Image (tube, rainbow over all chains, first blue to last red; front, side, top):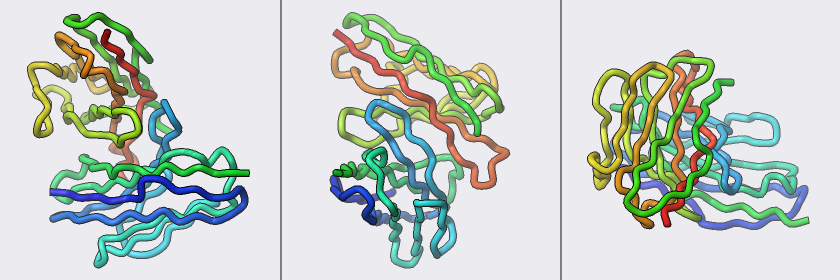
Length: 111
Length: 117
């Protein structure tokens, strides 16, 4: 089975940098996704990692270490609109469709 | 990007009634769609995987006779909550996988908020 852990809540200041960690345990790994979800809305795709290393996309970057079962999402130049929940999701190797979501991290950005 | 719609966006019903939620992929074909449930301040929990033309695969603990799933075409899946009760009140979200994407990304619908009185 899968076990995915994220911090429940984080706070940060506008303009700062924040790192949201995700650790996972799985018997078969086939990629890790990060999604952003504003309250009452559906998740939106942020990033995808399947190989070790850093993927950069604008203000957001995501890192993966498969040997450590660890990923992080890095948000730079924080804006108020970045206040949202950030969901880490792992895809199973024997089912390329199925995503298992972590508990999500609620990020609050203050001015 | 690919667009997934859900209808209705919200629904309020009386206990004991059935509610049908539709999930459509608007600009792509989806052989597989997923149904998730999300309670307040919690993450998404996969309920079932819906496959076009075949029976849905339900996650452990999800009653298949209570949550009926039909995937009649490559662009439409429906979830029917039968004999709904207040504990079924939740945010129901569907997703569809675009087979043309490089990483097989799932695209999520806007969600349906169900309130059972």
